[in-house]
Image 1: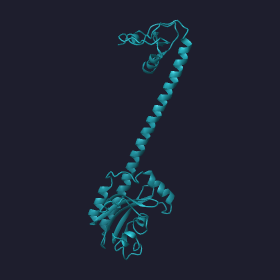
Image 2: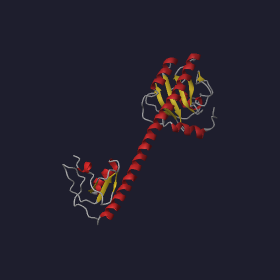
Image 3: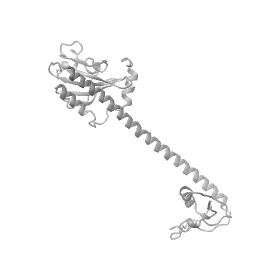
Image 4: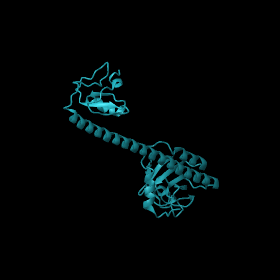
Length: 266
């Protein structure tokens, strides 16, 4: 288990899951509902503790509240615990008596939480239940809170795996696009250079690779050949098309003739 004092590393762990301020998606709503149902409380939440706030990833009974302060005593203290954190009467407990949610309008009295701990030992927040009246909590209820906190940690790992998979796929696609763009640019340069070298060679006036039904009206500039010895004069556009899409095609000298199958395509 990592030291709770390793705050810089802990905050980095919080951020790697990209959960803070994410749009509501209901991912943890059922966790909060189950916690409230099992413990019989009107309020329950799944919290993530940031550097200067406690963010509610899910909440039941906290209408309109998305974050609370980092005041010690409740979530800001409970997430650092090695196990369950229980306050039976917050007004009398010295850990919580001065907390704004206890002294203020909400007048919270009961609080029980289990810390959300990652597989590599970082404490991210809590699954907690809250009531406005003092109460006790059973061993079974605490066991359920602990299981729910572990379930949140697993769901966060699945979320992270999905994020990384999407990001890796985007990076692969971007790299493939970059390689294709570079290859096309290199091909265009080679074709232009070859066209310049062929300019003085005897050749037909028009491209021979436009097809049998729709001849290409552009001027012939380069000769292409294939491994069977067929060749044809072409405009630069059809040269690039053929080089990219037809196997065994290459730039050729004017001595070769043909590419009959390609010339006569529809």
